[in-house]
Length: 156
View 1 (cartoon, rainbow, N blue to C red):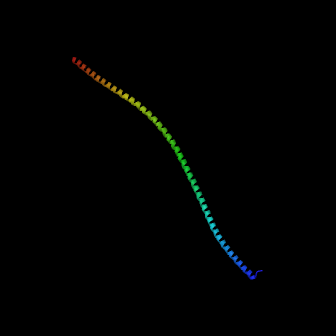
View 2: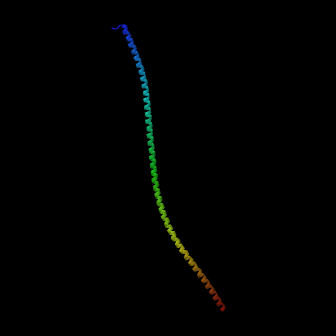
C-alpha cells in the first residue's frame, strides 16, 4: 500500500486536476455556448434574410403579375382600338370610293350639261342673228311700205 500521505497527495493532485479539468470544461462549455448563441443569432439572421428575400420575391412576383395584367389589359385595349380603327378606316375608304364615283358621275353630267349649254348658246346666237336679220328685213319692208304709201298719197 501506498502511504496515506501519498495517497492523499495523489487525491489532491487528482482532485486539483479534476477541478482544473472541470474548470476547463466549464470554459469550453461557455465558449461553445457563446459560439452556439452566435450561430443561433446568425441562423436567425439568415432566416430573417431568407424570409425577407421570400417576401421581396413574393412582392416582385405580385408586382410582375400586376404589371403583366396591366400590360395584357393595355394590349387588349390597344387591339380593340386597332380593330375599331380598322373598321372606321374601311368604312371611310368605302365612303371615299362612293364619293369619287358620285363625283365622277357629276363631272360627266356637268360635262354633258356644258355641251348642251354650249349648243344652246350657239343656237341662241343663230336665232339672235336671224332675228336681227328679220328685224332688218322688217324695217326695210316698213320703209318700203312707208315709201309706197307716200308715193300713193302723192299720186292722189
